[in-house]
Structures are given as C-alpha cells and as structure tokens.
Amino acid sequence: MYYIDTSVLVSYYCPETLSEHVQSFLGEQIKPAVSDLTELEFFSAVAKKVRMADISPADGNRILSTFSSHLDGRLFKIIPLESQHWRIARGWIGLFSTSLRTLDALHLAIASAGDFTLVTSDQRLIQAAEPLGVKTHRMGT
Figure 1 (tube, rainbow, N blue to C red):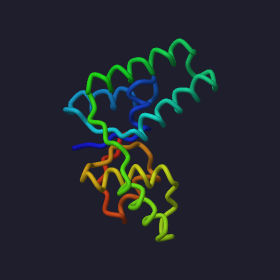
Figure 2: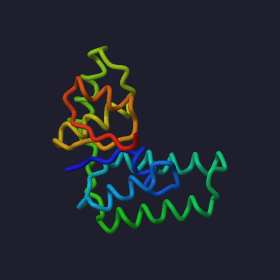
Figure 3: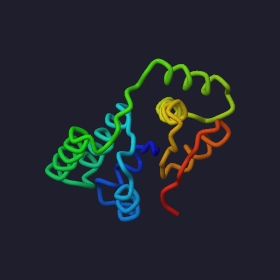
Figure 4: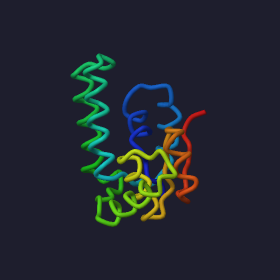
C-alpha cells in the first residue's frame, strides 16, 4: 500500500508541473494512505499558495473543500498519528546520521510502521528514507 506525502497531494489538487503524472498515478490506486499530519500540511501548503498569490482565495477554498470531501468520502485511508510514530521519528533523529526534519521524520515513521511505500517528490526525503529502510516511490523526473 502507498502512503502519500504532502508534496504529491499538493500536485494532485493544485496545478503544478507534476500534476498530470500524479493524477494518473493516484487514479490507479485503491485507497492510498494519508495521515492526520498530511492533512494539516496540505492545508498549510494551500494557504501558502493563496498568501503568495499563486492561487486565488476562491481556488484555495475550492481545493480545500474538494480534499476534505475526499477525506470524508474515504477515498484515502487515514492513518492517525500514534505514540509509536513519535518514538520512531525521535529515534531516527537521535541517530544524528540524517538531516531529517521533524515532520519528515514523522512521515517516514508512519510509512515504516505501516509497512507502506512512501510516495513523494521530495528528493531529500527519499535520500533520508533509504538508510532507514523505508520503501519509497519517487514521483517526477
């Protein structure tokens, strides 16, 4: 099963370079996973696009509404953040061997604990995942 990173979701719902590729990929999946963290990061990413005038407030509201309706309609499997995810992320950060940021470590921990393949377009996240044994699928070129 795939765990979808925020970078991929943003490309799915917002017009970006990878949008067509991401839409095709996600269209082939049956109920990919996202987390509570992904949901919060997605809202933040859309809000930033509105603040930066990349999209209009009306488009931002439409995108958030569509995403929320997809969550409510159970198009995604929602993975709640659990204490084990925090412990795994803390342990990896404490290794001092990666440049993991807090939220990236949590995404990797969620993917690892659920034995998911992390789908992301974030090259730095992919590089951090490899030595930790987290399976990844890179979107984009």
